View 1: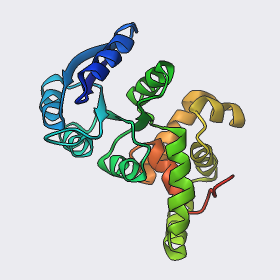
View 2 (view 1 turned 30 degrees about the vertical axis):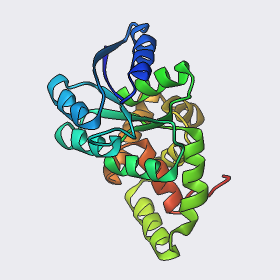
View 3 (view 1 turned 90 degrees about the vertical axis):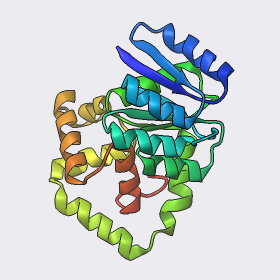
Length: 221
């Protein structure tokens, strides 16, 4: 059972999210909070698996609340929900340690898939956010920084791990990568864990960012 805490200052939205989530047999809503500070306290008390976190809220915003929750509970997963497809929220959320970033107008199927994805230890980004991340910010990195990141990746990984890393960077799932390499999904999962550990990355989102920062993957490829 995936235990979810809802943190949003709009009660009608929380009600809508609750109705969607509680219709699922594998998801349980364990609590609701109307601001970030309350969300931090409730997360400490309830220890949810996933927190659905709004960005703009009174008392404490969702970015600060995300950082506070993960500082105390590193295993908790944060899925940031916002109506604002704006770059600074994406970067601030990732920097704070969020595992997912989804727009509030995403269909219920996408929301449910995102919750299950982050609960399973993976990460998710809204496609529009990912494209803005790549197109607008990656080209701004100085070439020496890009080369240093590239060397870090290439020196740390084996040939097979580099292939799996390229799959991660392309946004492919473990199942898809396994099909490409003709190995088991479990084998790919082991490779992914080793890659994240070697490169000191929290999740797949950070792997995508590093791939573009290093120039190993370029926009459009």
